[in-house]
Image 1 (cartoon, helix red, strand yellow):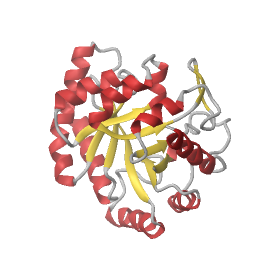
Image 2 (cartoon, rainbow, N blue to C red):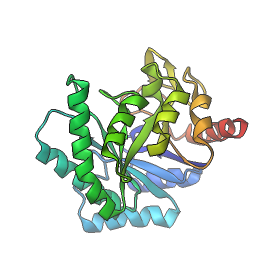
Image 3 (cartoon, rainbow, N blue to C red):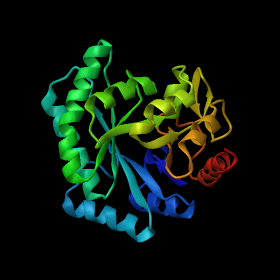
Length: 261
């Protein structure tokens, strides 16, 4: 099993501390939240990107994904969306990250209109991603919370450099059973975002295994060979416990779930 965590769970932590935390807790990768308020974002110049990569490489930790905020289904002009996608792709390539995470962001648009916009934009970005050696992954989120929603879009693109991130909480809270979500996303899956929460109607994050989400049903079908990334939403829930003290136990919990099938 390859385990990672998202820097969404450690707001304000610098790159060096993130790398040390990953190494000390047995995490092989980190999902970097690529927002301008974070230490790593598309505005970094070349030598800053080299410095980030050097820190990760020296510790034997990889950048799993550049988690961007491009909204590919949004009812906006194409040019700024394409520009953001390209910036994220090139940042990921410079950090030797295999993936870029993007959102749908379709809002209140009709399903057909949102799907068509997302597929068109992702299809155009796919060629840039292929040249860079990066896959752009659409997360099941906001207007497209289920595996069925994301699979429709990714299948319409039909390009190997466009895939999916499975956020287990969004799909489950939308009423889709984990075995169905996995079956729909498996052909396109880059990695799985694991979480736990207080309840289907209460997304407050809790330590893995301490909440209501059927995490075993999510990780078992994905198998022991893929990437699992804990997206602990500390930034949006400042009152919850700090992630560093929970990480090692969270990784061990996912390992135990995989071992028992």
